[in-house]
Amino acid sequence: MKVDAVVLAGAPNRGQLQDARPEKWEAEIPIHGKPMVNYVIEALQSSSRIADIVVVAPRDIKHLLTPKVRWTEAGDTLGENVFRAMDVLEKKNKVLFVTSDIPFIHAEAIDDFIDRCVELAGDIYYPLISKETSEQHYPETVRTYFTVKEGVFTGGNILLAHPQAILNSRWIVDEVVTRRKKPWKLVQMLGFFFILKFITKQLSLGELERRASEILGHSGIAIISPYPELSTDIDKPSDLRLAETTIVPVQDKEA
Image 1 (cartoon, rainbow, N blue to C red):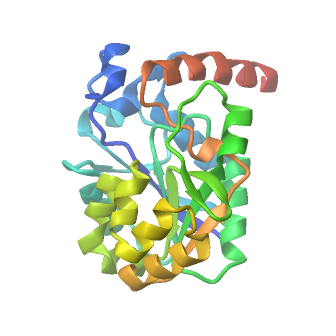
Image 2 (spheres, helix red, strand yellow):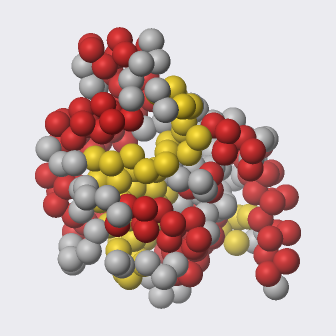
Image 3 (cartoon, rainbow, N blue to C red):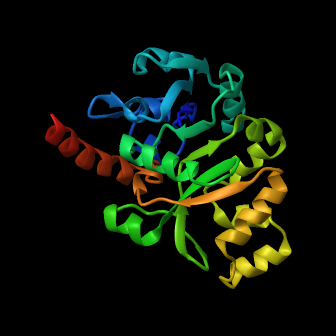
């Protein structure tokens, strides 16, 4: 199965990264001379599961993007950018949404995630990476984790969805996007019973899936991925330093 991909690259450089880099937009911050967003684009282009690629980015960095991708201008919010991309796509395939700040991502991780999704009937698929896996591969990074019956996990920075599931969930997308890096705030959306079970670490992934499906009106599936590259983003100077010391040796090895 092939899916379309959307790269969300409209975030301004207003967080901790602005202490290390002067660029206006996070997506254009260079890692060894290459804009961060292009690592993501090139990983998607190398994937055997990706058909069309749309990059949602500010007009003033359009010229920096890797060739052979479609572009649409970014709006003011991440939620708005999701729907700007949907307006461009033909909506025939499922859509893989990827943020532009995960330059460690590679084709193998993308293909594996999509292949795991294909095996399960659902409308929205979201990857989870265990704390053990994340810390084993990237011990220097600080991630936000949450605990369920099955273990301790962090969320990925990608999501696969049926186009209609996204279009029908317009009312909740902005809310989810706003809370996406704060598991506690996401759980608050589920209701008191789920908050109580979350606090006592008795909540299961199955319960989360069922409740999320009820709220969205579409079936949601959690995919446990062995690839921490799906969640290891660059949002502070220490992450950027890690990318600068990790990515180059890999490229040199492949050259």
